[in-house]
Each structure stands twice: as C-alpha cells, then as structure tokens.
Length: 338
Image 1: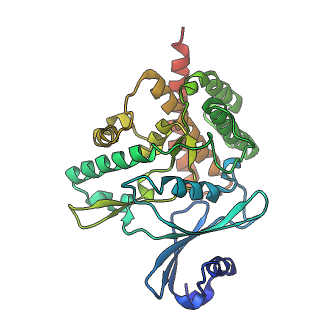
Image 2: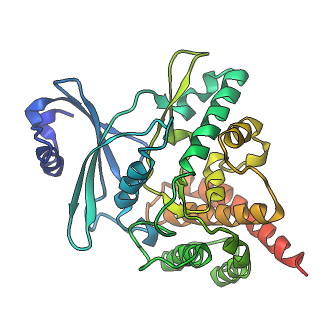
Image 3: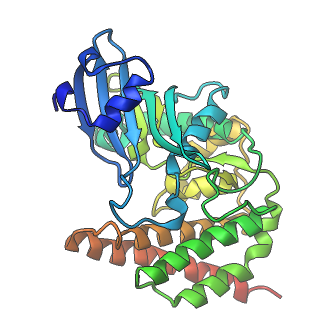
C-alpha cells in the first residue's frame, strides 16, 4: 500500500499527532486480527507505529461483549505500563468521540519480533521451556495490577456488577444470548448451559480482587525476538479482549485446548514471580467455566464472521468438542456435590 492510499480515517488519526502522509515511507496492512484492523507505519524519522481501528459502523454483526473493544486495549496498556519487565506497546495516541466515549483508533509503537506460533517449530525443547518460564513470570507480574471494578471497561452489558460472580454471569449470559440470536448450534441447549453455569456460581465468590486479565494470550499474541538459542519474549500484544477478573481465567488461552497444569515451565515461572499456581478443586472448576466461556465465544463468532465452510466445520467439530468436555466437567463437579 502506498502512503498516498491511506484511508481518510487513518490520515485523520495521524493528523492528531502532527503526522501527514508525506511523513510515511511505508504502510502495510497486518493480518491476524479477526475484528479490528491493523496497519503498520514506518515514518521518515525511523519511528515504527501500528494503527488499530475498529470495523466501520454497519460493516457486520458483532457479539455483545465486542462493544468498544479498543477501550479495553487502551486500559490494559495504561494499567500495565508501570509493571516491571513486561514488553508492551506504548500508546502514542487514542482517538475518541461520542458520548459515552468510543475509542475509534489507536496509535501504538511497534514491538520487534515475530509471533511465537511462527517461530515455535524452530525452538529447541530447552529454549521453549526457558521462554515458557519467562512468560510465566511476565503473566504473574501483570496479574498484580488491580482494576477499579470487575468486567469489561466499556460496560457492554451496562453498569458493572458488584462482584465477580455477577459479572461473569452477565458475560456468559450475553454470549449465550448471541448464540440464540445467530442460531448457533451448541453441544447442549442454551438454557441447559445457562442453568449449569449459574449453579456453579458460588465458586466465583472466592474471587474478590479484579486482576488484569488479557484473555487472549495464545502464541499469536506473543512476540519472540533474537537469534536461535537466544530468543527473548519481546512483546505482549492485542489486548483488546481484556477484562478485570479472575487471574485463573488467563490460563485458558495460555494453554488453548490443552491443560495448563502440564506446563511445568510456565507454572514454575509464574510461581517464582509471586503468582498463585495452586490447583484446588475450586480452581479447576473455575478454569472449566472460563474454558466454556472462551469456547462459546469461538463457536458463536464463527457465524457473524461468516467463516468459510471448511473453517466453520473445523470450529464446530474441534471447539465444540472441547466445549462438550468442559461442560461435562462442570456437570460432573455439580453431581459430586453433597
């Protein structure tokens, strides 16, 4: 893409920081995002930025929690900026408008490195373990940040509930409402899923501190830099799906479709940095609830995103299968209660 071809909305965001298209020597759309759009800019003075914008109004159907997602990403970077030893983008500019304010664009610094998933096959086992331990420490430090209230900062479901149980119930209710709205086929009827999750809500009352949760820390949102054998974790990015809640929820995307309890290197690093890596029956049940929530999102968003037929079939089979396993685990926990 030529700088002369910049979208007027991008030009407007750049104008706010006294940059014109003539100051841009390179602009490249970035792939990987499923909701917001990303554009890498290289300026004549050597600065490297990423511009992030939400989809235009009327461009397609969304899930309820996706309202004003960039508000959450803005809050994440601001909340974590004083956490030591965490490689995060620096916010350059936040474009807002309307009442209540909607974040219509972000400019942030570009971090070096490549997504972990692209480099993973070339990592030696020892190097991978070292990086997972490093990541564990980073995540534990991020979890020390405490928010003003539970939930999504943009209040997509209205004012935040007073506790984590009420907040998470509203989050799951919303995605189940979306499933009904879009006619998504789930492994179990929506009302049955809703009732089952509600019955386990008492374990959520154990969570009393709204910790900073990224909730999308799969390898694609983690950057690695350096030469083979000497790589470092160089970036934690794409925090648009963050919320304030239970740090245990973070373990879902960190071990997507897998068991975080088997990741000894990560848990060692997490505990060494002060994170609580004790897996009680209560923690395991909460983890299954958060898996259900993420898998529900992944299943439901496939419909309004209009996935290609093969991708849709894989999502229904693979994600739906994992959702069934977690729902069965929740049902088993309920059955085992006195």
